[in-house]
Length: 340
Image 1: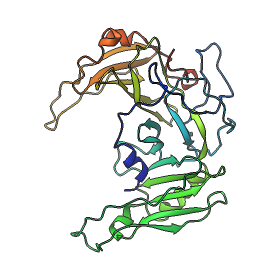
Image 2: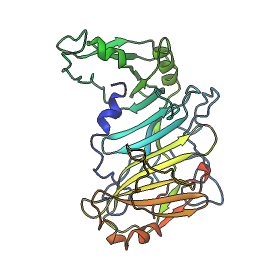
Image 3: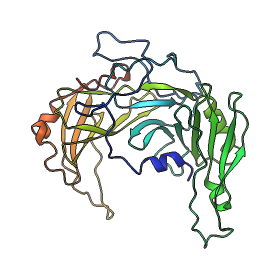
């Protein structure tokens, strides 16, 4: 309930994003042009790292917010990114798929419960409505028919209008913690938060919201796909990075083939994969993958569902893998030029 926007966004994830691979038939929108580059470097590389450091830093990114034409072919576009985050947040991720795009920040995944934040920026000119809430909990104490979302005024965020979203049902109100505010450029933003207690339920989200930067950026990726056959299209992409300086990251992509079949693409540090176990605690056979390692990074491909022929147009799984170039684990070498 706390992360309203993300919960609805993940419902649809297999409609292709426009203009991310040949044959997709569209053009990406404007993005902020990177202001710095690394040399020597592949085309499209720049030094923006969208991960706020730990240690209480709230420094805003240095790029200008003036829109510029997109020159990269990177499908991962972000309209909002975090500035200040509490030190309890260990990872930040950016996601784009058919249901929209958003940023997430999460605490230690090995600890439950762990604090989390989900950021969504609405398009210019859109005034979001209050969400529809489920009304089917007659067995819960304190339930009253007609549960609905309620707007409650919040302190201004950077001097601009803000409000909380809560529920008329007190049971839902205990778990809902969504803040909306109008940003400097007039666009509305939404921050869902979870597993905060006491005064932190309002104090911390207000501080996180005050540090959010709104614009339109391509998030650099650690790979390039060359000479991709027509008919392959990126459907969804998520990049997750650690904030502790360890260089930990994971890229997950879903690529649709010429039909209703899909390929899972994962990229991360080249380290041994953990042993997967079933409910009985016994090791289980992992899904078959085709992998390659390069510059300390490993990329793996796997057919999703029953897609046994999804690699045919690329000359097999190895043929597709051979088209992938890996840039390494250092984000300063990553690129917004994901394809030829």
